[in-house]
Image 1 (cartoon, rainbow over the protein chains, first blue to last red):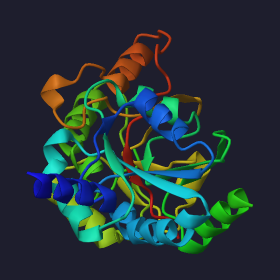
Image 2 (tube, helix red, strand yellow):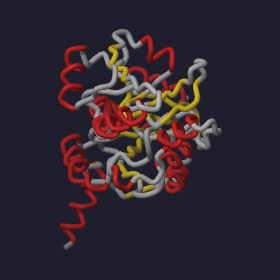
Image 3 (tube, one colour):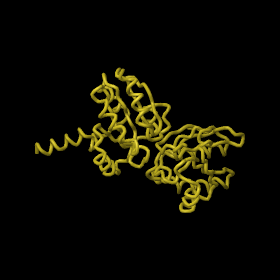
Image 4 (cartoon, helix red, strand yellow):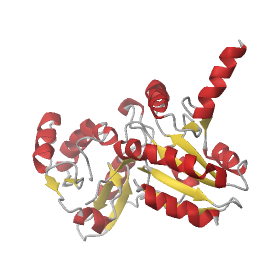
Length: 157
Length: 136
């Protein structure tokens, strides 16, 4: 039993399983728990090709800057029925950061607007929060590693 | 309508787009599809339309100039322009990409129906998830 628990917690630590479901309020609380760290929240989906393409860069970013105070959080917008595909993808990627699925139900527009009024719903979409918890930057669409790195470094100063 | 050949979110609406285009064409509303994805060439747009019976006019926007003009960000994304050239509706077709039988908020239909009878559009701006337009 202990081994099973250890295996499960190891999977979560590596981000190879979904860490749970969040709505906009839950995500806000999750971000607040990381106060003192720069938080990068990336919204993605398995059906979104550019999301999958940039995902390894986010893992790389987390590994490079975690010790300096970066926390990456992934939010899958996949449907609940797509969970096997989400966890297969996470198992392949081993992102090293937690990923949640957007909570089922409700109108997606409420979720989108709660995250950022400028967000039209396009994926991927990334929000950076400064260490004091304020929203510092939003990035629409797939971005190169160098751009994420530049934005994160500016906030880590 | 900014649409795509490979985006699952856009493809989920192929039947709805085809049916709405046919229904509203009789009432004087023209549906037009625009593909601005650099990763989806014109021949692919044509074969995709044939495969899914998309009979409305389709245009390839090879340098995403139209997408830039409209600030279109993803597919499917709808812009409704009236005969005077004024933008009257922007956003989604409806809120349920997963199941057309369970749509609770047919936003594009509501907007078009309101326009046809000269009423104000209750929700002229809506949002849904979609695939980013792959720009040059």
